[in-house]
Image 1 (cartoon, protein in one colour):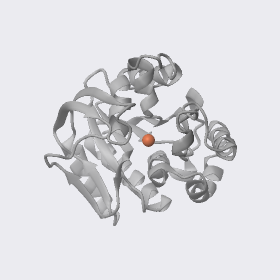
Image 2: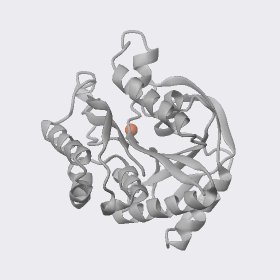
Image 3: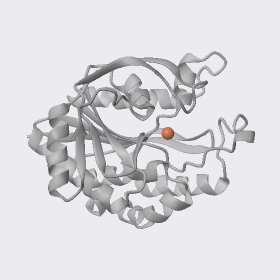
Image 4: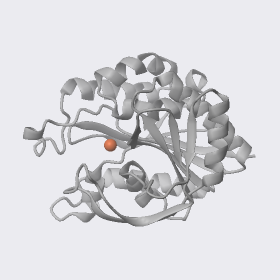
Amino acid sequence: MGEIVLAAKITHVPTIWMSEKVKGFEGIRKQAVAGLKEIGRRAEARGVETFILCDTHWLVNQGFHLNGRPGWAGTFTSHELPHMLHGLAYDYRGDPDLGDLIAEEANAAGLRTLNHKVQGLDLEYGTLIPMWLANTFGARVLPVAANQFSAPEENRDFGIALRRAVEKSGRRVAFLASGSLSHAFAPNRVSRDKLNDITDEFLRQVDLRVLQLWTEGEIATFLKMLPTYVTACHGEGAMADTAMLFGVLGWDSYRGKAEILCDYFPSSGTGQVIVDFPVS
Ligand SMILES: [Fe+2]
């Protein structure tokens, strides 16, 4: 029987790449680099065969989608932030069979889901940056899109279906919610000054309260505030990744307490973190 052996909310900001690769920015995200490497260390130690990432940079407008290609190789340059992220080489195996199983379970739950195996459907940096640091041991990769017009309940149901599929699959899986906490990108005129700052103090304070709820195990309370959090704090990809993560974990019946692997940090106006949610 398959199993979710690791579940985490993670950052994927391009400043992580800059921290390692761009002259003048060395070390600016060293804690996030260490946190993603720790995710990889834990995943490898737990025998993870596939990383499933809900990637909030793979935004879709209708339905649910998996990238079930058998593999990808290439060199990535971001269209959004080409000055921050370019030249990221990658080569990963995919997991088409697990994608099929998840689509089957999600469709049975009434969620319109497709598992794509088409040329041209490449990886986004919400997958590539975490995999660059965490997947150094050849695990498979299976990206899930974030529907930017979806409701938390739909993503919860997708997470529940995903977990059911994993349990049927025989795979050992890490589920990573790859997205921001608050996500108000700094306005263009101040974007350079806000490289290491939050756009609005209100957003930082809400993010910190969310982290407190997570570390104290107050998940049911957090889920009550999630719909308003998404709109008031500019959720990245409607925070589909976060709702999906809690669906995977059992939603409001989850009793675990989050472990912070990288302290909260602002990046280009947004709020970022790496948090491991223990799975039983
Ligand atoms: Fe992002």
